Image 1 (cartoon, rainbow, N blue to C red):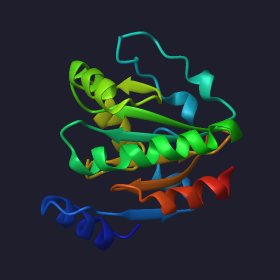
Image 2: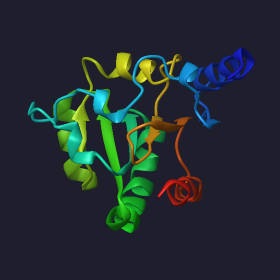
Image 3: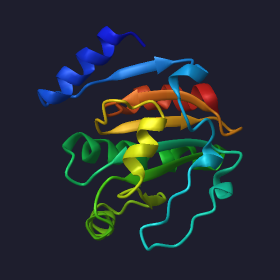
Image 4: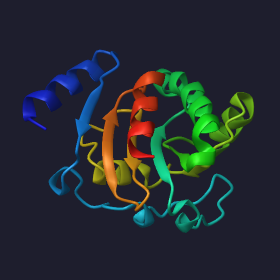
Length: 171
């Protein structure tokens, strides 16, 4: 991605706009440290260790978010809807919160979020940056194919049709 696009996206985020950067056909140079799903090591919201292998063989959307982020909250219903529609075909959403776990647990109950949530409060920002989000804006999503490799990156919230098209492309 060109420097100009990154600067434009950073400016949009600073102005409070929803920046939407869509990177197609991710190359190795765009994702610096984490190249596959099995390299993500974060606890669940309750502190329990999560075995990343439980999502092996699925199309997994990893979404970095926070309860204080309005665009993050706006896309949760999209994730819930599409997860329900495509779960039987092997689609999963994995939320990584950049927030206090107690706030996320309360929000999870309020919104009835039924997809897995991991606690990224301590290491989530570094993980997100290693997955190509150098500006640190939220929400940020990474789509891993069934073999666990990064295939799509997105800064900003997903619209339902946009995500549906990606799911159908990679399922």
